[in-house]
Length: 194
View 1 (cartoon, rainbow, N blue to C red):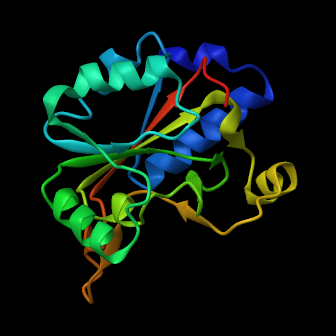
View 2 (view 1 turned 90 degrees about the horizontal axis):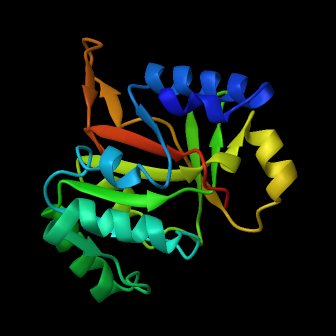
């Protein structure tokens, strides 16, 4: 966590709480900068993947993602939510090892990421590939859901993503990836404010 130095005072405490909670949920946090994004994300996105770059992704981030992923990267087009789009997307996602998307907020108290409904090109992006990679900016970290709702006042529904998919059987053995991704990476870009 060498990039922790970018956070001071209460922000550093929020980051520490978020990091601890995400780790408890078996998620992985990577702190980076826009300049180091390509280098730091490379190992996370090895193999075929799919991404949905939001309108708030800076061109530098998109270029770094393209360079790190190479020819294995596919992009989700806008409007892939109809029946034919959904089945086509499902087939494409089934062949991918990872998916990447932006988030709207991070909640320190639960280690969760908030994604507004209007941001999600398809819920399949967040459920089908075995590895989900979420990208956030430094100013998206909030103490809790109440603080986020008070600040952002979202007008649409949202989803909270809290670690990789998990379930337990009758013997209480934890199984990851039963109903969604087995791995969750959160890339927090410390010098990017949305």
